[in-house]
Length: 364
Image (cartoon, rainbow, N blue to C red; front, side, top):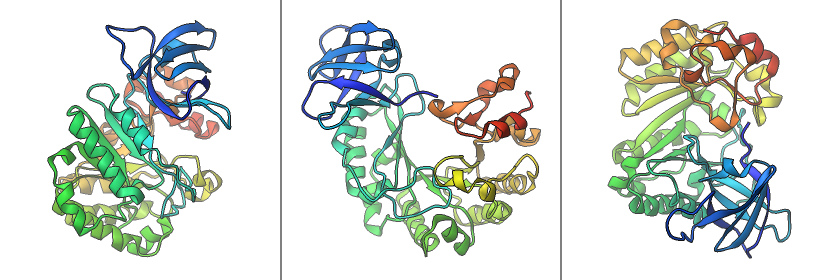
């Protein structure tokens, strides 16, 4: 597992953004902190904010990373690796507040919010060329105006960047349509959860009354705005048999989406204590998933599988099993070492039960 938060000692009066680099190339860049000294398990960097001494990983592994530095006046200092160099899995946490309470939430919501929009915007402007930056929460659109403003300024300044925003889509209004028609938003996609075509079942999963009906309204505004939408469905024992009916609903009502991602459960957050009641052993009964994929294909809806190790998926559907798990939280079992398809496989979440992972692997 890759550590995203590392202990650090830093000068400076308040949090700041910096790119850590091993050596200076050309002139002095005020946004960069350069390696001053490398030592076992860390390194010292220096830049316009002064010294930053980082522990926990060799300094070379931080080369090119864009980090948020917390000097630690009232608590231990640290850095957050917001945008890791060379990684395709960089996601910024906008807030930990949320207005839903999903039964399997991997990031249980908090009541408090720390506004970091100015810092996150500065980090995005330092992203590698061509980067796709994820936005997550909590629920980012609880701060919709700030979120949209940040993305607009970044996209206007950096024509090479794109955003993917995870949102429950409970907060879009008719008044947002004109704004979202801005050509800049062709470089923004929205990952939106939809768990069932039956309103009561969707509402029960997300823990919010009338959430399904509110989601339909938001999807209507996004459709009119020409927004790019990825629908996401986590499979649970309560909704797996309803996947075929959801596929029909999407095919007839939501044909404008770019892709439908059917996702296996993550053993973290609320799901950890409810695992036996929630987790679907898809390898033992793939029929409802297969039926949903077949119906999606029949109606021209692109569908894909997230978090499904390839060896657990029937051959006919293996081509849509994506290498979806972020590199920083992905693991493989020892048996995966000899698999011919490992590089194309998602593997397992770092926190997936070890015995279940070992039992489910059949190298291809």
